[in-house]
Image (cartoon, rainbow, N blue to C red):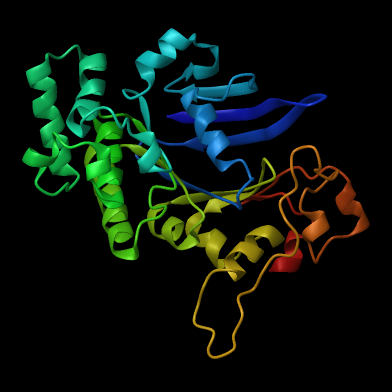
Length: 317
């Protein structure tokens, strides 16, 4: 259903342009789920915005994004407006800022229905009430006329999900959907997303820093680092046997019971900015397995159902 081919994204910077994403390539089947992980600055949210056609002004894209056989990158903005919310939709990272503070939550859910389905106000409001009920918003008959500031973080996130689901999209992109939520609400939101995706047959892209969330929600996982894919494969296989030192570092840094005096594992250094990326393997300055040959280009190595950008992947077995 979704095919992304050699996607590049660049943004203007003082003195020229900087590559934010380079060579992103993946496929997602109808009803499938893909987790995208990586540190802040790896390009996860930028990839989501590229898929939605919501990149900041001045951004340039190369490559192809096919949704049901249609290249979204060739469509004018007027055509993309017809597809956002209907063919593909997104749950944004921060519900406090992604909702319109001047509109009731019911009107915000109904707006997509009225825009895409030419429904009258009464029909769109009835759909909004049904959606708010479906996503588990408490007292939806009363909350439908509430404004975002009157709701808790978890309730606002439920409204964001209702907006994204309003026109039954084929592809749902969830960008850190549990950010700033307590663990109880987080579990509720994740169960809700999984249930709704299954009921509607939607494909799901889940962007998260939380590897535990990805393990629970995604059939396949793609690891981004400094704007490029460093590993991809089935979630179960990738978590059981990572084939890139960066993936191994992320998994090693997951919180676990360490006992008294225990310390979390860390990855030394930081993600390089777009204009500081080293040649060859982008992770080599932080990698304990780095060797002189890592300064050369590091293309993805295709294995059985897996891919990795590490030439020393066998050393991780």
